[in-house]
Image 1 (cartoon, rainbow, N blue to C red):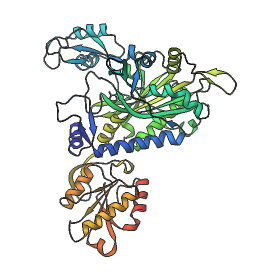
Image 2 (image 1 turned 30 degrees about the horizontal axis):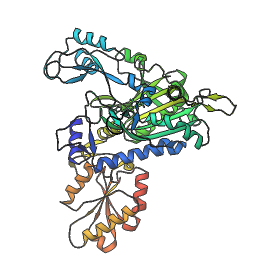
Image 3 (image 1 turned 45 degrees about the vertical axis):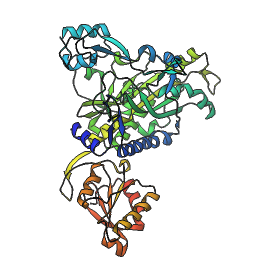
Image 4 (image 1 turned 135 degrees about the horizontal axis):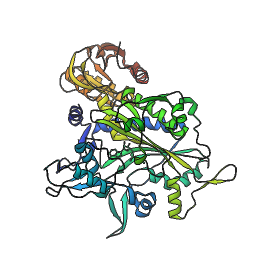
Length: 499
Ligand code: GAP
């Protein structure tokens, strides 16, 4: 399944392998025009859904951080993965993944020495050449660089967008009302020198995150809008079920999840309920979504609780969001290390270091899940024999494709005028005049265009066009001047079939 999706993604330039003209390096993908439009729409939707609606603030911070920052955050000492090298072919592998795949052993929280022992017990060899494996070592995932000329000083490219938010917290807090709670977010690239990048967009070395740090008074761990979502249901993969190796989930409301202490507070439950609604809107079905309560050995020592949102794919369950109750760990560490007081004054005159709940979304993994769950074959009025993407209308990379029936008799001129009109009204419009109309419908479907608009001979007489709905392939006629309003209302109502 995923192979097919990757084939279409490459064929239609949704994705492009980076540096393709040279020897490919794993873990890097470019987004072509279609993929970039999809990514932009996903990020904009996230902005509206999580930030604008709740008055959270968005910032943009730098990629390169001095060593002192990452020492304070703990990334310098702890941000790594266990690695083994094949003594024969010199290839390197994630030791825990190898043991999980070849030895069928769960590896959460296992130390390198124990991994070495288990790999030997299970007689795991190099999966490429069968050679003997080295002892397991520890590899820091950050890309190191030099800041300044010659050797300069050591810097690292950020492994998460979050640290920039902690560094800027005090200024943003002071310039925006000096009140808690306060949500500060960032959408941007993060970089991890993954040992074994794999599975398309799942494990990249350069990827995008949408992260929200919600700063709050630890004595008031509530969310002002919790009531709105307290009855929303979601599926939880509990620690008990994970221990049994079963796939069973329990279903709880947001309120129940807090009451049962699976979720540390209302704030995290609020975000979890909203995350469910968000992924459902993206076209991921309810049964393909679950929250996994992270095991104690996977949970950082400072954390007040971690719950990942996972999506079922043909690669298995994939983590798309890490929800973490980071407590006051980051602000406290930066405060100690920089010598600057990062506490804030409360209304009662007391001082406190704010606590943080962080939902951290992976953009690329989410795109991969959307591609898989929106992928369709055949169907529709034309009994199509092509594959297509059933993206929700608001997410369609191009909402419309404008097509002249033929490239003659002024039909192409008329179609270009219509395309310009729609572009002026803010639509993302694809103009396509090559090949038969059937082939053009197929090409539009393959990239998930929601509505195809065709200018034909009637258009020249009465200024009407046909509007073809992607999902059932049925068509209606509409006056050209009414098109923008009609299309807006179709997109708003996610109307993708005529009947
Ligand atoms: N600030 C917290 C943080 O970065 P994380 O669980 O390491 O937490 C959050 O990452 C999300 O970023 C993950 O759930 C995943 O969706 C995405 N992500 C992490 N590493 C990735 C990689 N190598 N390639 C693609 N996405 C990745």
